[in-house]
Length: 460
Image 1 (tube, helix red, strand yellow):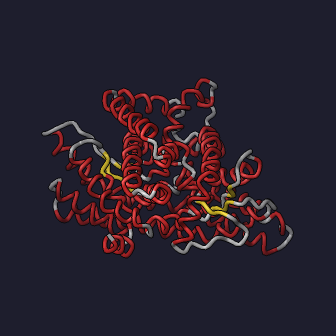
Image 2 (cartoon, rainbow, N blue to C red):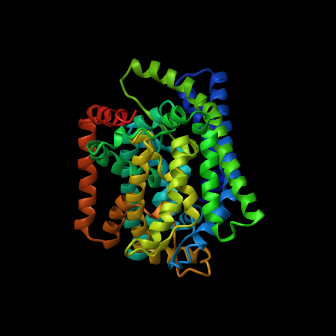
Image 3 (tube, helix red, strand yellow):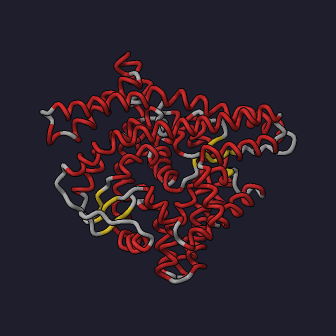
């Protein structure tokens, strides 16, 4: 398992995913030339996404940090981000054991048609299960309970991912692709449930999405211009304490131009990445049409949707909102910091289900992520105890640490607390709910998929 982890860490997604793409293409009897080009498109696309995001992060991060500091509030639970959480997950024995179990489980589930999502292509995001299972093992002293918790969470996320797959693929325009990371697919369940309620109150009639903004405001509604305005707004909020200085305005314009660049360049990189799946999709349809009507999806890293206009727009809008909510939310002790920049990852399920309706996405984000803050508060003591044993430092202003993105999961935390209790009753309830949900979905798959698309179309 250590060797496997080292390979994954050393190669990275931009290398691992193209290898998987090449193998899949050959399985579907795509020519070697087309298989190689598909792999290259995937690698170049992913590398492009990460170059953009990694260049954008150090520019906007200091502004967000200053914005948080300007609140003057010292909440005891500090958000250290998903990166530190991944380090914790991959540093635990239970986590490393699951890395091997997960690969086998996910492959077998796809081959036996339990799921139509091929998850092993996004191996890295298994850490989302690992950290929860590691906490269960630490408290209960039982590896069996910890591993079982990870497996059940994996099953839940596969079910949710399959539920979301067609909508995500259609909205983000990646043929037969979907996201699988548990921490980013979970909010889509909330979006599916609340979508008809929003429509009942007429929110679908509010035509606020990147396309309509562009139509109404012309060049002012272009993604580049929108990125400039949103970036500068974040910059202004983060520089209120020194707004009269040249240094502040230099940073404000720098953040604005950088955000504009992401908005402008990201779709071009996405177009390259999407070419990776054209040959595979066509070959798969030809092969499977002779055997079955199965429609399958390959799991991709959620970096693929980060810079889509509605996604990045809503992510940036929610950054100051979530800081404010953290300060006023009763019972909350978590201060979101590092993972504020991860919100464009976190909203992708909401964006796909709400079909880019910015008003709905922001409202859903506020509700779901506020619940997530309370979950972070509840799990912080346990996560902190594990993190400190593997060398994660606690900031001097904090007493406890968490990850707003990874641990702020209201739905999955219920599965976690069931296993944490060690109670056969609660664990049984969690298992029964999964199988009931699985059976209901499989028996009504087409109707459910059509319903989600029908609701989304009302926003168009």
